[in-house]
Length: 268
Image (tube, rainbow, N blue to C red; front, top):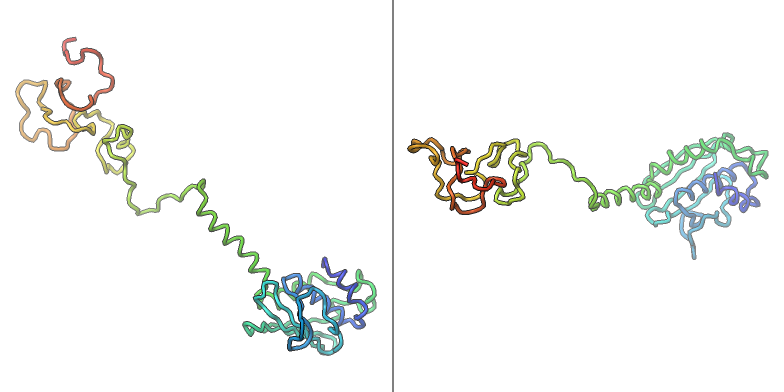
């Protein structure tokens, strides 16, 4: 119980009974969890200030110790009464704001060696058990300020995580609409249709100059064959590979990739 030793040395002149030493230990545990002592008695006195030390006259009544505490963030104010019943001490604590009450009963002999009141290193025993009893029996039911302080960084971390520009966004949930693909008119979108497994846009792995993404007015699908194709042989919007290279003079970019010189001459 780090910090209790200098407190015990300061309070040693007032400690004459085992219950005095136990109250001193209980007081320090409250200080460790974010509380400061205001004074003695049920009602506030003049010029009270929060302190880690025990107030003057705290040990005057050996049967009922009455101390008041306030949290460092001023959110909680506690009234502690330590009542001696034979060899046991009943700790009764009330939060004046919420009116919550918590109590725990401690056997003085389980935590204090009465024959070693002059020696701090021997006066206390089972200190971990004492801390656990105070934390679980009093501080937890009333809501210790330390618990609130531990939760705040976690909430702040969650807010900062959403603002992190390097964070990988979550995958698209099932059932959501497929992302809109870029327009095929964009020359940098060549091949994008092959990435759409749902077939939501034109394209594919078959070369189709008639559907290269550029408007081709006046193209005759019958070019390169004798006669003409019957009506409906090439449905509107269907992918179609012409029988021969398309005639010269068509508007727009050439859909073929790096055509060789004189490719219009079919006898070359």
